[in-house]
Image (tube, rainbow, N blue to C red; front, side):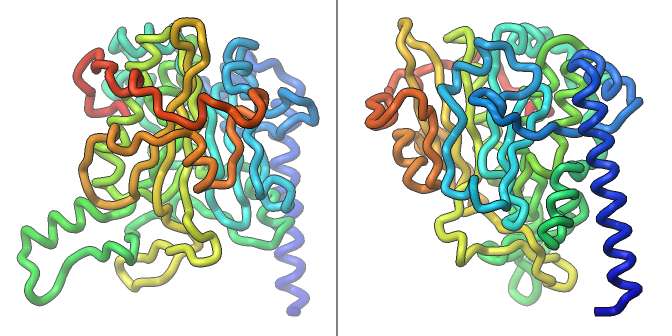
Length: 364
């Protein structure tokens, strides 16, 4: 191997590892409140912290005991011990990310009464300068450092730019009208699809906590390729329904993530200009697991929605949580033991909740 290339790569590895270590040191040596304020003020970049080697060490750093215990344990995955996955703890959500596969495995967040109050106020919309969407998704330093260790490229904001899913090509050329081509591009172009949603994060806690959580949700470790018509209104409608359930029950706990039917035969997104294949796998489906207390008893429901450029009622995707576990290899709520009866059926009560309001355009 070329000596100059090795030198450059070694220097790059040292620089990224040093930067990540410095950020982790900042996070470790400052309180959560100090970190939140510094990110909100733009003094430091957003960055997650690694999982701690304790039972609750995967919890988001700002969760209360009530917030954390409602998940009934860290999800158990088939990939967590392969050296490629890491758990990243942000202030109001946690995510497990697969470095080599370039995809979140799951994300976890909660909506409580404070989140509901903030959202209902209507003060944290995109029209508020303090809560405008960040212009770009950032590369998580922990992911960059581990990518260099494993000698794999890391996905970035630009990896998603001007791309499509080859299973649903953008129509163009002979026999396609200008209006058909325009509609196809609008429906099928790839977006950076939040797993843990922006709207839920910006409405967390105090103004500073909401600002920081919103910025952290724009981590590349929190997104997957998502076709525009899949993202809204179907998926965003399910995200909004989580607020409805929280309003009904007082608090809900949520797991969210992608489904890949066969990780050995995935579809990778491609650039629309030159058809170059990218490193990002395009999900076959997306899932939600929603947990809450109904009449004092724990209840849960799952949803699996196809990653296709179609519009459908998200309720059609309701499934037992066991079905999501079968599709993903993830064991949710492990503290409840197996077999877990709340995972084997769909409690139809979840599907009867009425929307509390009309959606706003910047909710997702």
